[in-house]
Length: 509
Image 1: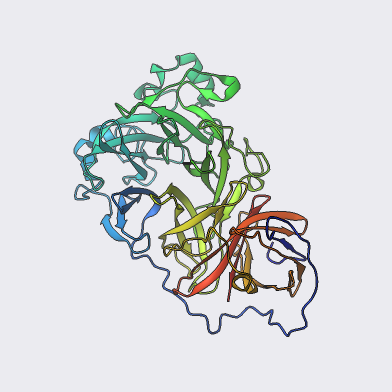
Image 2: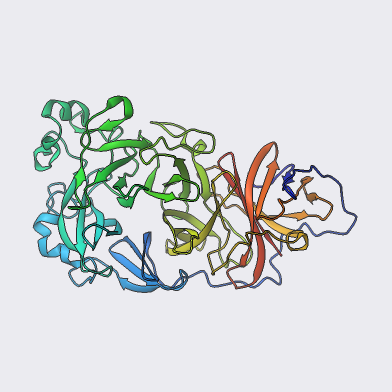
């Protein structure tokens, strides 16, 4: 939806909801113009694709595909730590010392399953500090084709490496001819494997996962888990042994979607676009949040971030409608869409293909999403971004519209004069396309009304907090106000709200 036909914004003052209406006689400008609004440089100084975040004593590290890594002390300006394939890479390079092992199955032209392009592929790393061993563990994948991959891990004494290759964990993309080159038959019998994992002589990728995009986390009880998967059979979950870093294979439970080798299936299947899983536990809401990306990863591929949540680590993970995508589902209808393609004032270029995120709760309790974005500049260059998320009253994340610059939402709320005024508003919708969510103008008026070219309705805010509720075309949205800086460093009032799996955002100028 690019423009609202009608809207109702309801925000309760002093704990009560009041429906207001009315019009204002003042002359208003509903035309979208960026004249007089300063723009900021949207480059972060580094290129880290699929960034996964780690905080160590006030320094933030991001690790990405193509063996890249960077660090920052403010989540805005990043310094390159490593980049590129080869032994000289200070973070990842040691895997080449044992290339006969690390690439034995997939990831190079010399693997059992050859790479499509004859090059080396080490993708989507995630680093965690292992509280049991006191070392840093990197989980990553080597990959040869769209479904033939191998999850591996390495260990280092420091977050900057070098990470020493420890072994392979999970294999995918095997056939009946090369399954014995994997460890699959150590956990399931051959008849089961060939009946389920093999289809028409090839790997059954529509029902079982691509062993790629691993991320590792602790649950609230201190147990260690790994979620992984990209397209193919969907997103899976396995427990890890913190003493060894190895997978703990579960007992099969078909009724609960638990496979003895691959683990618990959480979402997806049927080779729909779903990848880059990341699970964050938030003690404030007592929910586990499962972030994934939909769409194609190119700038015009509709790449975007979605989120589901669960009260238990192994699911069931559901969206705002209590649903989740299954095999061959129309998955654009499932999952809260946090961000896709959009343009706002102060951005030199529209953000495109915002996705493959990680997330974390910082030491001060603030919550952040870390992702990469491309731009509508005709190229495929990408840059990492960090945005704060605020939980609404119902415990769903609201994605603040600009990258973080140290903003802190006022727990006591904002004065009426701070929030009334002229807003540039975008609706991210739920589509998966190259379309850009461009802003339109909405006035939030002192008499409780809101209006624009094709917008009419009401608004109010909840006194003593930063919470707001919005209803648009019969759809209710629950959100937050937050004063922050735009990309040019200008102080602006913003709001972000979610409802029916959509995110809407507004910026006051």
